[in-house]
Image (cartoon, rainbow over all chains, first blue to last red):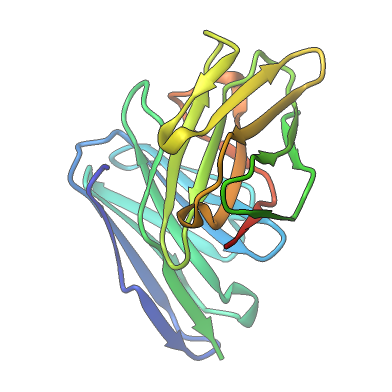
Amino acid sequence: DAGITQSPRHKVTETGTPVTLRCHQTENHRYMYWYRQDPGHGLRLIHYSYGVKDTDKGEVSDGYSVSRSKTEDFLLTLESATSSQTSVYFCASQGDNQPQHFGDGTRLSIL
Amino acid sequence: AQSVTQLDSHVSVSEGTPVLLRCNYSSSYSPSLFWYVQHPNKGLQLLLKYTSAATLVKGINGFEAEFKKSETSFHLTKPSAHMSDAAEYFCVVSIHGSSNTGKLIFGQGTTLQVKP
């Protein structure tokens, strides 16, 4: 499996605070993705990146921003967390002509 | 537009009996289709993928899936369930029918329970 690590693995925070989740991959993959997983919805794409400093919105991007300053790191930021953003967040990376490989997820609770 | 529907939210089988997890898709393009498995508190692992080669696709751990264009289906099967197969399974279609440009659409998931 691709070396993908997400940090933190668990986080509890309060409404209105900023939160940054980190995804780190060691495979030099060009593409990286952030998803959220909620009951009854499968995984939904938040943002994705197709290269350093090249990002685009996914299906549920409102309230989220991303940055990719290095190939190996893709950061997801909640500028002002809301309770509706309580979820499990998954990062994935993908090389050319390869399927996506997923991290183990970050469980985020916003009180 | 692409979409995917998993027809069962929960499937329960006895150990040693066959597994069938059903998936229908909708795609404007010749689709790329995938099955992923998720064990508790873990990320998603790729079981198999279809990318317009053979219609019967073999994956890991004895799973296979058959692409049926006339039925727009991509059902996942396994001849004999093991206890370790208990997990959540996702059927996935790739936007634009490409397997290498990302943007996946996930089904809602099917929880597979395996009884001893």
